[in-house]
Length: 215
Image (cartoon, rainbow, N blue to C red):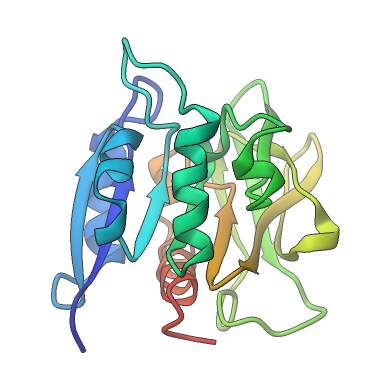
């Protein structure tokens, strides 16, 4: 099987590459994946035809750059509809507007608020049905920034619930859009959360499912 290419958009002041990159080495086997690391979402747009998977840890807007325009988001949306996978992790869900193509057409989900401090967050796979992304995943607790997100639950499968002392919220969801697939996971601000073996496996499963390697 030929290698797949993943563009990983990461690294900002609150979500540094020093936390993310070592974990990505555990998620993506170099014998199976070509990994492209960048802090610019526009790098993905410029090379979108090469990408089998786009993975978002930030909004991909380095200092001095604007948010992606509707037209730029549309380029990515069209590529997803044609078969590219999309995996949003934690702050990849930030600055997605309710009327944006990412939310309206991809049902990406969007960040609304987070816990005021890092707190223990327990992430539990749903029990009501089987899905390849959560198959074999055990509940895990990690100190994290607990994200509360909006997502259209009528157009996705909720895979994970995340509970802290503040609230229980959707912690993961996945669905198809055209020929492509979209996955979102809200844990992952801290090394404790992102590097947890169960979270690493969730990202592995989510990546494989997003590009159709497991179903």
